[in-house]
Length: 224
Image (cartoon, rainbow, N blue to C red; front, top):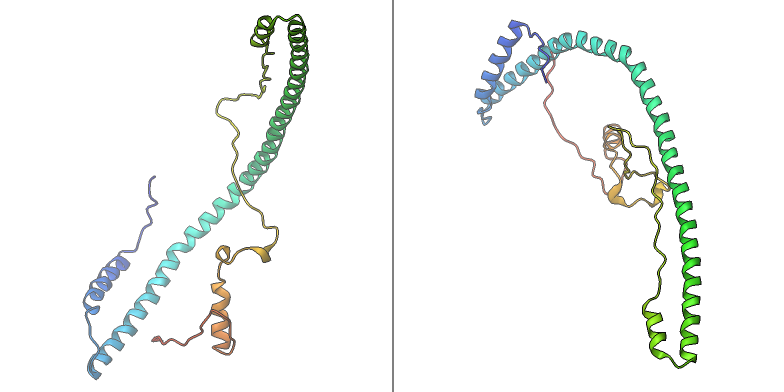
């Protein structure tokens, strides 16, 4: 897929190269003396300013892109939604048709099976009677031959007359729905990190939540 070519101002490209070059060197900086602390602090403030400047430029570049994407969504969105609604409607109707075809076929198959069982029972009764008559006449050999030649009613299968459309077929997949949230095992639940972060910032460690530790951490803040 062809990538979108977004023009970056030349002065921004030069600034980014310079910043990355400096960062490579500054990453080796050690802070063990007052002088090194002052230097590191100045660098921290500088790169913080750099990041804010880059964010401003990036925002100015992204703004018209966002607006363009928003316009695209506004143009295509309604039609895409209509297509999805139509597909959902047709999907239900097609699946319902297939289900009805399968139901009719199953019903017909059950009738054939019942007819076969009835016919087989009739044949078995006749054979049993013939065996009984042969045995009554003392003809065990004939009785055994009748048993061995037992007729079996052939199995008839109803074929499902489902419509076959080139490039379209049905398939099944598994999904889920929640029936009782209170019974869901812990391993399937997700921690609400956003809420915990809000509690940490608003109440510090005044609130105790089992399994959670609220702690204070330091960070440098650059202004200006």
